[in-house]
Length: 142
Image (cartoon, rainbow, N blue to C red; front, side, top):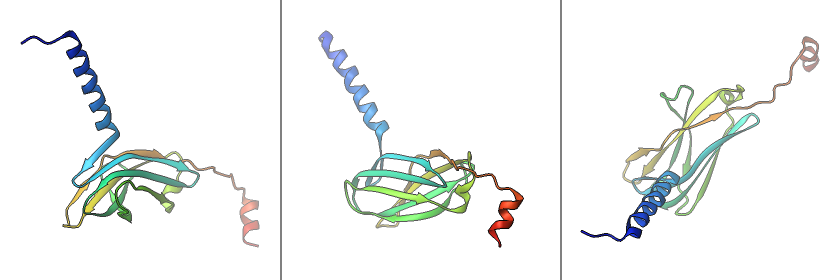
């Protein structure tokens, strides 16, 4: 079969564009999540994501791990509908250790009781630590 020279270039460009779209968003059953990221903001960690599709989704369980393997639920956000942006603030005591890596993922729950797990993101906490002397600690309790 004969293909024009431009055919292979356009197919290659198409594959690259499709590959970038796949990297930027992930589909989980009836939800398409994009921009799943997190960052440290003083003594808390901010987790954000967007959805372009939410069909039959009840909500998003936010899970955290300190080792990247064992995750626990730290919060749940109810679905708001297609095209929504979500923000979850992790201000628990564990996030107050500066320089530590925390791992986050989402568990997408649907109306039928099914769930799917997102990719894992890593966020390093940052905390401005003020050195305390014995005298300053005693002054706190006077």
